[in-house]
Image 1 (tube, rainbow, N blue to C red):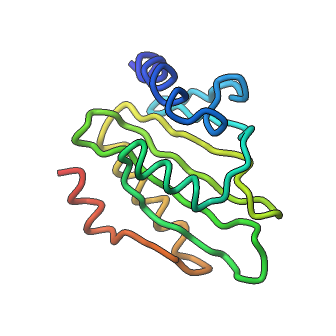
Image 2: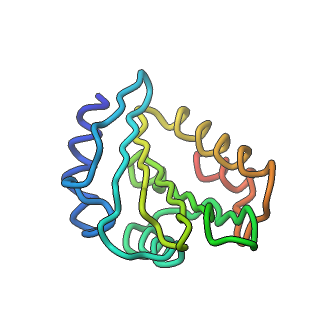
Image 3: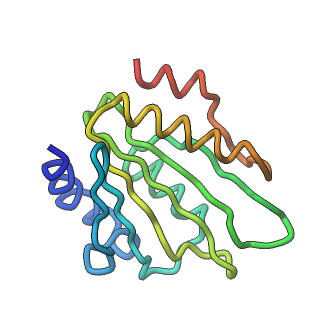
Length: 148
């Protein structure tokens, strides 16, 4: 079943984001029991805010957070967005800035169940609660409502 999700994702998503999610720059998929992790090297020159806008506006994804570990550096600012469970697709996308404040790597996680996806989205949020601060953060209770 995960292979079908991967095929559907690769047929649909890279066409929406040329330069961001390109099959030519994708590393070999890491396949686990409940999910597939895809890593893309970004060929375009995007800020984190541009990536967030693309995910939210072009893909109608739900923004989970915009996390800033430190204002002293542009490195490590991150975002996560997840597909709307009502649309039947089950994936989340994570992006992080490098030292120059640009996104060079994007990871997509494809899930085989809504329960697994909900748990991983909530876990992602909890991991970022440990340090830094948020420019934007969706409350866990609101996340859980998305999966009902």
